[in-house]
Amino acid sequence: MDNIKEILKDRGSIYGDYQDVSRVSQHLKSTMRSVENWASLDNQKKESFEMIANKIARILCGDPKYIDNYRDIIGYIQLIIDSLSYTDGASDVVVSKKTRVKGVWQ
Image (cartoon, rainbow, N blue to C red; front, side):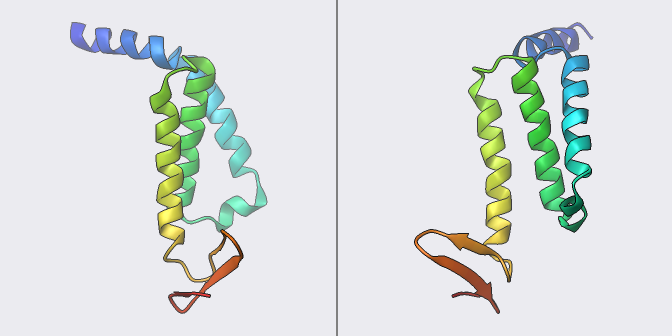
């Protein structure tokens, strides 16, 4: 039990007070869920955005210089990008707009 208390104390110094993080995270998530487009997102995108909201809350309530939170955000975004790379109807702009049709980028 002492080990868990030490871990929580250490994490608190990085992420901030859990009550504060929870409050900010839930406000961000509530705002995201209130947007009309939320219902059209698949579970992977919803989960990624909710995890990102938690990471943002940790940054705002804890140590904003803790780089790993930013890496985690990039990771969740990369998971969405990877999924969209195989999704018909997805679009991307690199030099020109491309659309995926029947598994082929055009």
